Image 1: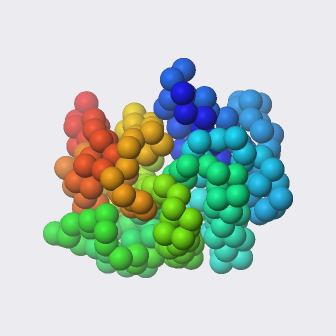
Image 2: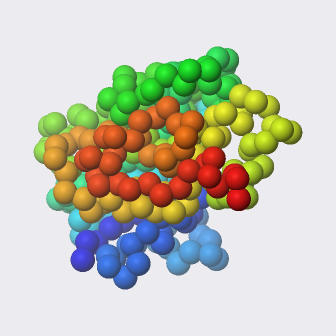
Image 3: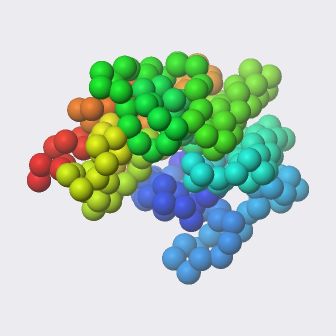
Amino acid sequence: MVHIALTGAGGNVGREVLDAFGDDHDVVPFTHSETDEIDSELLDVTDPGDVLEKLDTFDVVLHLAGASSPDADWETVSETNVQGTKHVLDAVVENGIDRIVFASSNHAVGTYNSVDDDPETATIADNRPVPADSPTAPDSFYGVSKAACENLTKYYADRHEIEVVNLRIGWYMDEADLRKQTGDDVDPGKDRFARATWLSPRDCRAVHRRAAIAELPESPVTVNAVSRNDQRYFTLTETMRTLGYKPRDNAEETLKH
């Protein structure tokens, strides 16, 4: 049984990931504030002492905590995302934790295929593939913070020989939200973006589970985390090969039902 710390457990992705492990592994959720829906421990990632004290005795840290809006300002993402991730990495090293899974984002590479300045709208017609080893190309300060954190995790992996998985997460939505973001009443660019980058709840659970427990061929590993969408341009070959991820959902198939 792997002992897993989940930061950011109160967010949309965090709540989904809580159900990824069943009774096979021990998951301790951490949230920034109290919530009636989750029995969690409080953790302030901007406080290095708090992080060092509480992220102890774990085998793996799933680090999802941080500002999650593409519209977040620089002050917010630099303090919460960049500094917060450094504090988590320091705790991983100091406390002898084996692996960190970092929740990166498609926004770290968001200007590939983009046709305007909106980080959640259109892509070009040919949907040029974006492999997992593509250099970062952020579309916002939020994307910049995720790109910076990918470099932080690589630095710590190389210097301290910890296991690192960077997940460039797509657009996590349930089926109802996917339908709201697609269709004739939605801007065609946003519709295309949603169909291309969708990460279903089931696939979200699967890719985080594999990132936490799969045997890694190397470290760091940076991979795309989307469903097997017909219109996807973030490639999944690397995710399937390195993590054993088997995506089951497809935006086009789901929208037909």
